[in-house]
Image (cartoon, rainbow, N blue to C red; front, top):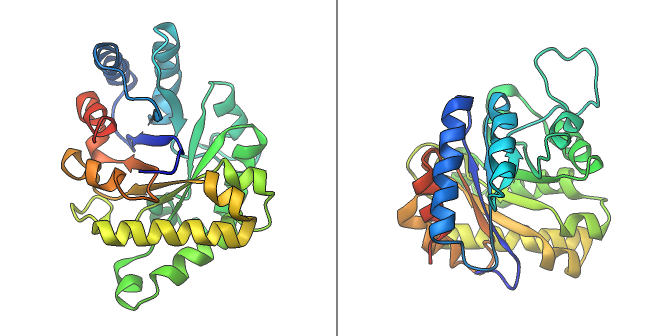
Length: 258
């Protein structure tokens, strides 16, 4: 329940759905949104794998579906000999609006450092897209009382020394690593406490106005059952949804929660 900030619900498909399946998904989602539009102040983005981006773009734009196109990652370089990588410019040319940067799976499985995440956010911003910058702690770090310290360090690396106007239009996704794909969800108190901490750190780094505009998502085993309660948290401005976003009806119901 943000203070006037638009809520953003983002469906991260990860390595799922072919481009044929993606087209069918968009058609189903479009039908649902025509029958029951989202309430004012809510926005929806979907983040297919790279192979489906063009198909999803065409499907969204041809029917004027009120859903933003997102990507799951990009490379920090503008171009070059980076076999298998995709640049921010390539995404921008497909009318991508949001790019997930520094997802815990990228950090954990592919060794992305805070410096790499910063560079990727720079690349996304340079092409006038919005990065969804992910931060979060492991179970060991939380149990050791280091959750805030870990997130503070990630925030300092990602948004420190940026103009207030830039920070104000970012999206920060808090995703406790121990809750990603495990079925475990942070308690509402934990989610609100960390979202408030993220906003406080943004204020320290970029000022009160920037912090007031910054959107903070929660991600970590989000589903239809817990979405409404999470969105009711004062400092939670949206959700980053993984497995529960793989069916159009499920993501639609999450976006309509509360």
